[in-house]
Amino acid sequence: GTCHTIQGTPGANGVFAPDLTHFASRATLGSGVAPNDEQNLRSWLKDPQNLKPGCLMPDMQLSDNQINAILAYLRNLK
Image (cartoon, rainbow, N blue to C red; front, side, top):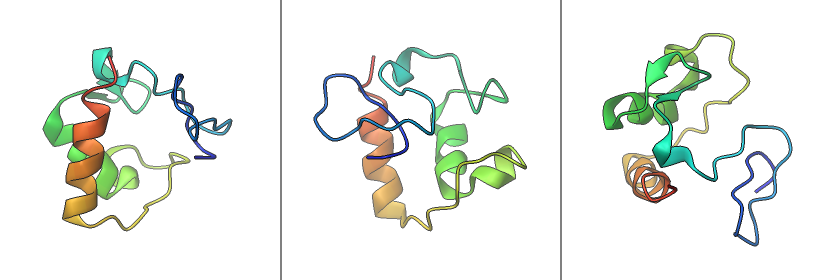
């Protein structure tokens, strides 16, 4: 809620991280370091530093179920 913004949602009004409003329509993720596909997004959510060392996104220690739920949600942000 405090990191990313997603326009049209009541709780995602973050100011520290990129706006995710149209995330699913983007060709890349991690500021262009990888194609925006399921495999790379899963890797990013599991360990952002593995895909982009030095990035500011922390490892949130997400479970596989949490990652699956976030993947499903982000894929609908067009």
